[in-house]
Length: 137
Image (cartoon, rainbow, N blue to C red; front, side, top):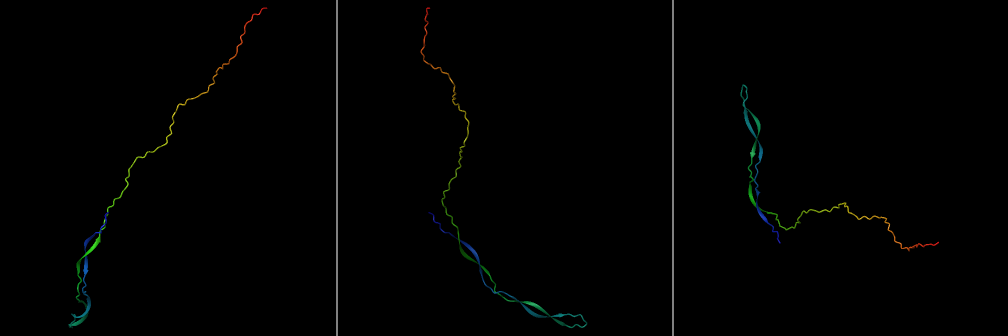
């Protein structure tokens, strides 16, 4: 009797490891810059004009790194079991059929025929003998 034994197989699966880091955010900053604009007039007068410029502000943040981690996972493997099974063997045979056949055969049959035959019947009679007598006259 064979008893199935469960088998396990080791497989290396790579699972990423997650680290938390600080994130860098950009923030809009308003900065006033004086830009001299040359004027084309007879008397040059320096003029200043305000312009709103958005400068990004930089924050430092920790970065997240992924690191490969080895993890052992048991994966079940299906087992096969042998079993002796009796399968009937099919044998092809010719089949014999009987068919009724009508056959006409002439068989001589002795024929009897009636015939009237005259058979003489024998009758015994007494015979009378006549004797001749001489008559004298």
